[in-house]
Length: 339
Image 1 (cartoon, rainbow, N blue to C red):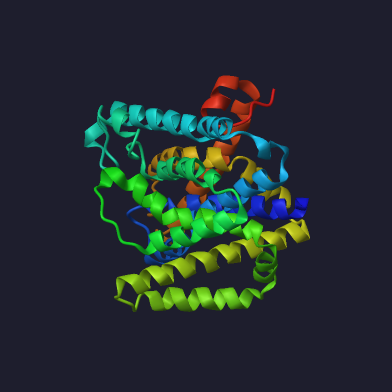
Image 2 (cartoon, rainbow, N blue to C red; image 1 turned 90 degrees about the vertical axis):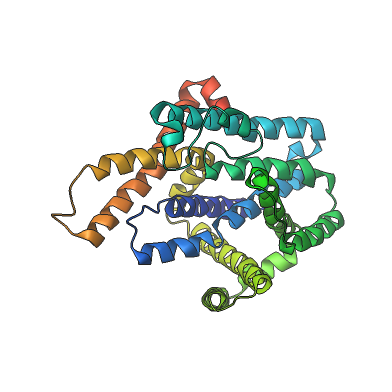
């Protein structure tokens, strides 16, 4: 695979983590237009993240020297990369919440029982679900390494995606795994099916933009649950392709590429810590009485820029500081120690 194609995926990862930070900024005073924009991002953001993970996984298996790593070593590496940071951030968030309020906290309350719940449930915060579910992907998918096996598993995953399953909230990881497995495998097949990938990438922007717009608009008019799921699935795919095409354009032009690549390199740290830094920024910004001087909409826009920028930049600074200064903390956040 060419370096440029990897740059395209890295840029797509950067764009996606920016979208994740955006749709995690939804304060109670959010105007309707911001909620509408967030709904658009939410329709494909995490699905694209999962597909990118599938693509980079199969790329590593097919083209890098580590493709011959045994299953046990592979899972150990993924446990260190994903689950150690998962437990670290879970313990950190739960501890902080207990210290400042615990069960009295209005948003995602915790208790001492949360230290046990985090082994099977996102007790610390809803956003950590992705890390746990991604690890589950790596437990299953390596057993289906051949292209035909991946295709067969993808067909099964597609069926499972549309099969309604009702389980208690404590089994949310299983539900998320069922819903997201097909997108991880789509990422795998996007690498394997090179002719299909070329056709998709070279199709005009307008095709996907129109399809996305029409389906997203019509979805609100549909009441049948199955049809809503079908529309959501296609919307996720078309939105993801649009981001990939934008990423390829940025990669081809080379302009601002280094900015996106820098964000991509810190994407995991941004994902884990953006809500913490955004919370701090919101608390500080909320003490500044700008509404009486500027006005509601302008104040919200200024505040959103400050909070969202903090959610991206502060974790990047933390990432670079930790990876240069501490081997232990680098290990705990799943980063590579560079000193």
